[in-house]
Image (tube, rainbow, N blue to C red; front, side, top):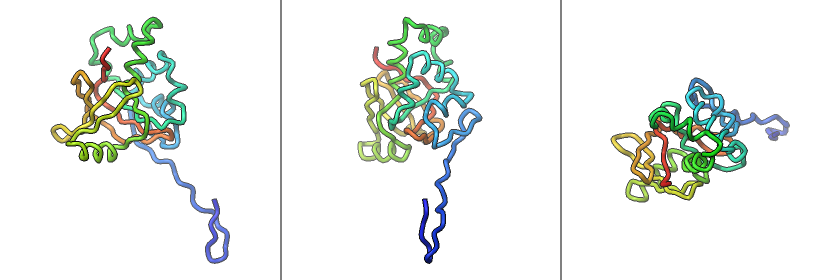
Length: 178
């Protein structure tokens, strides 16, 4: 890009990619969701699940997407053997339902979620790719995501900007009504 200044043609500075640290790695705002997630040490279970469900290409799409990304510790809260069972080929449908329950069409930053919640009595309601609903609200000074079963996930790292959306890292796996 070039700008004319006082009759001179000069190169305009390029916008630099921004980053947020997740799992010890810089998440670059000019990268797509799967590329960034695969660099984070605390999202390895999520990355393996996304691969097992065949959702990498979807999350590499143009989006935009808002992803509530559970950490490895969030998956560890599930009953023993749950993750191993879900990544089996025969469980692909159930795994896909769980993972797409964490994805909302559109790009919703923390500021967007807060503004929407304030307009609607303190709660923002989001429709997921799975067709279910999530509620975002403030509880005891923290912003949380609540699934239909009442499970509460704290947003640990908000606003991890991506080229095709935004990721909010959460501490609990959300479960759709199955």
